[in-house]
Length: 237
Length: 219
Image 1: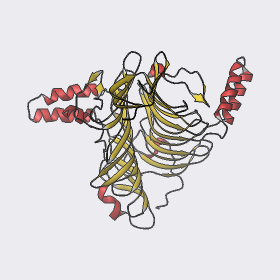
Image 2: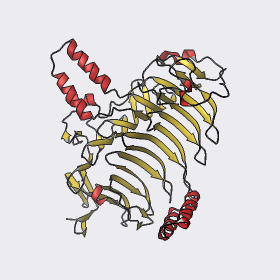
Image 3: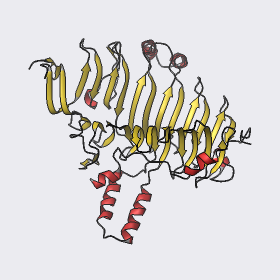
Image 4: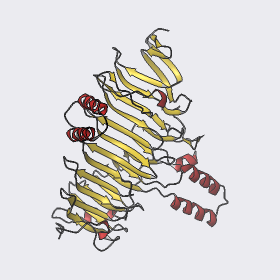
């Protein structure tokens, strides 16, 4: 082969390789990362089981932990890019990402809480509930499941779609409680909110903040993880 | 296709090295069994690290960062030139307690190989008072304080925290484990100099031990 030189018994040197997918494996064959184009992107592996899904066709790198379970990734497309790490046996807890939306572009660092229970358990329960006949009982079971596995965004630091830049912290229920912001109008502020999203403390320049800030103050922190593995996407797949 | 380009549909390897034409290793992508040792100016230092991921090397062949992960940890880190990590996103978990977020460190100007050489000398000393003192002095000389953290702490709180050059936390914006938001400015000894926290609603502002000194500018 031209351009290939043996370096030692089990090391080859190439000038340039092109591949649709490169797997990096441990000696025992466990996948540790997969670099792939969008057609061959790795499926999630959860609890040792591959989950066949139609999520992301996106190019990039998927990480797997010592158990062989997916534990994060670095993926990108035309108007978005994303790198995240997952909590052990759970979903993503910290991410740096960029995305363009119809409302504007956001880019920054996001931090989530995840339950202590494994995501594989959630998936099993979810599939069992999905199989129930339609009706109030099913809806109640689903609502309970969602509350048991609630995974609120706890922090966002970056540029928001409206053109502001902020550091926003939320409580364990996902309610926004502190926001340090320079608004799209250039006005800086430090605001504190109660659980209902009402401004209870503020530090702002000598102008009224109310017109700017109260309108969106009751929102939960936006969960902007569309591009990555979320349980919903797995289940739909 | 150029004659030195090989095309594959899919390959599986235990380690992939990216090298400059002169053979200098610039990046290693590896599973745990062939994971590279740290290198300084092309010299390898044997350690027992066994994670998987990427290690980056600069033009000199010195390790300058990496993206690595295992079961209960993951990190992407960039190093100061000829020094250690200065910025990164890190997740670590121990006994069910998790810490994750963006971290920024200060590093000394001194070349890390000097630190390694001195550390080796100290480790050759017999255990005892002299060795402990030497270790302490070395640690002070190469003090690398945490300057900034943004993320979640093991107690379940989230915080943006900034420290001075000695590593003392001086500004902290947080939502505590008690779900109470606080903005605090701290003195050199950790005392709260100024604090903004809701007084009436949303929990118990004083439960975090922060005294409400100095009032607020809004008052």
